[in-house]
Length: 310
Length: 309
Image (cartoon, rainbow over all chains, first blue to last red; front, side, top):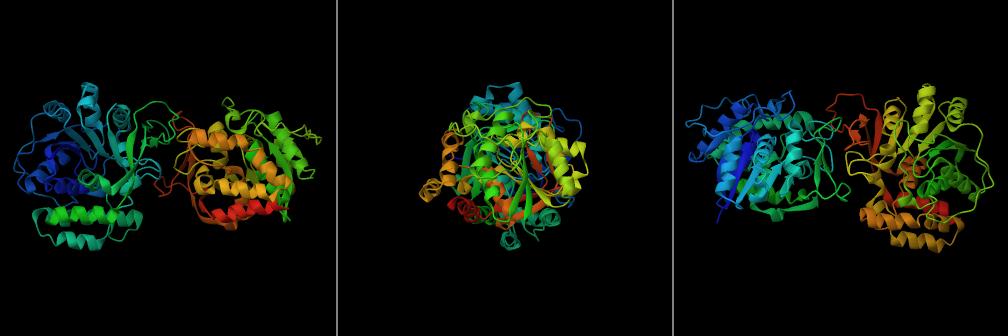
């Protein structure tokens, strides 16, 4: 039976690859997309969510709009420099055919968890605002969700939006702390592992040879992402595999190695948004998260390309 | 001869670092200043003077700050033993402490030999912050300052986010990091894992059967045990001797780079974290040379060289 997953996402160029690969994988059943601000404003992200499900005829998958701003912070800083003003690499995609689900994201998440008790995996690819609000509204979901597999954080190294913080966590650090302190299984797919898997231009040539709607879309939008990675990291057309690493992990967890440690999120000061791994259990009994640290990067990239070109 | 100054909260691994500098052929240690840290000031002073005597030297030992600038002290007996020396209870040294306060002595020395003295700090940065506060000109007169402290954007020891020396007096560390002196950070992460003295290394030191070899292992016995139980890391980490090895021979550094580094002082969660802006996102002027990798066999060889005779 396919594993039921709910993406909470801010599409987003790398969100697009993560979601399209999941939609093409029979092992995964996407029960819905909830959207959140992050890579672009939430209205843009919600429309992109619709575009992604419609691209290859998954119009039946509901897409719901969620939080447009973090829980407590006033300033909103979006990833449009990385993903384009439209979250799709400034390609001005046509309007979607369908409409958003009338339910707000938090309500949609709570209903899905209750509909599939013990079976649903939450897959956040953006700031954790929706997930935190759902938990606050109905703390029982912690025991009803199968697992949370999120892209975010940096436990043992450098950040990307501040010297020590990763962007998804930084965009709503308070929400992230709520998610990490809850008593549920969390797998953290953070910069520790996502920056070790680097997609090269040769990989993209193979991908784009797929010539299907999914690969055609990625071919249009990814140059913006490549340009950013070149400008900031000097990657010469290559890029770090952030959100799609989550899909790869859901499909083949055996491609990854992990460290178990409770995670705390800094919500003030210089280290705002830093995820701190309490490796030696110095801070008490918080439930450990599974922090991915190593990947079989070649196999991860091949797996995703195979799914996208098949 | 190269001139060195050592600032230390002398407990077991500090003692080994002091011994290394005192016995290094082309180095003259102008003075040793003590600071509250691992153990209270008087104990630091006694341990430093005992080590100087053991090496047959008369290097002056000055006593400095008895507590951090703003925080309460946090002694590390659990790691270094009740006397800071693994419970060895070494005898009271005959060498007396100097009358002059460590901060005054340091200011005088660095002004006397401008641009000549290498400073090596093995404890909280309280004395250095005070000296730079009183005499800002020191930032241009210190040849280089090697800091055993911090963990560059990675796991600490006293908390998951911070290394002990910086955590104990984060305000002092922050002042020193921003004082404009040529600073080299040798973080805790460089002193773990492979860089530990492993069982075979300890056996080798034992087999040398020298006064200094036995001293190195004996005074660190508590640390070996605690490290195993506390951090699940086998064998003996020697952060101060690693830092001293880098200062004695910077050639053992495999990789280092200069970045803007700041120290967290507001939050309790990340108190004392050394935040290294590796990717330049803060657009601030780099202020610290961060050591990322050392030649581990070379560091151990420097230690053995000192312990052999």
